[in-house]
Amino acid sequence: MRVSTAPVRPEVQERLRLSRLEAETLQERDIRCPTCGFRIQRVYSDATGHLSVKCQKCKNVHILNLAYFRRIRRSGWDKR
Image (cartoon, rainbow, N blue to C red):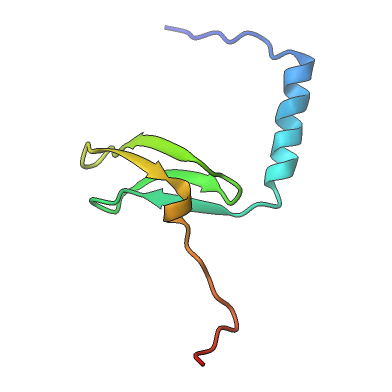
């Protein structure tokens, strides 16, 4: 079976191009399953909010707040 796609309109192509340019400066991070550690999804550093995901490995469904799954890197942090 052959799947045909409709041609993308010029204004949609422009939005896709702008999105790609904006994402070049962002860092990507992996969201891992809290149960088994399998990589569920990859998001950019500016992603916020809640996400409903199903792990393909353990089949658990999780609702994740992306703010809780950030990794904070402290550079130059000293114990005082």
